[in-house]
Length: 68
Image 1 (spheres, one colour):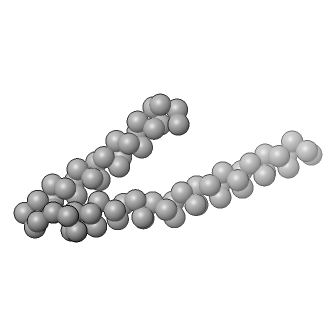
Image 2 (cartoon, rainbow, N blue to C red; image 1 turned 45 degrees about the horizontal axis):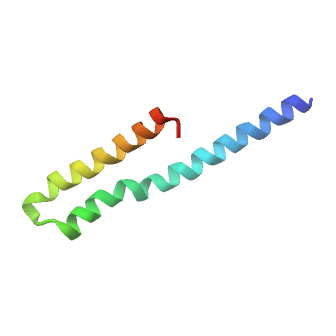
């Protein structure tokens, strides 16, 4: 019985963590277009947005590979 309660607790904890991280994803995905609009001229915005978006995914991948 105790083992089942612990597993149920961790299941809810993992679900809550995923919900919180999923909620903040919109902030990180909105940052590269916002930066490109504020800092770059019109002809450079597509490149700046794509580099910023790719850097976000590469950083997440490197964090996963490094064990962080």
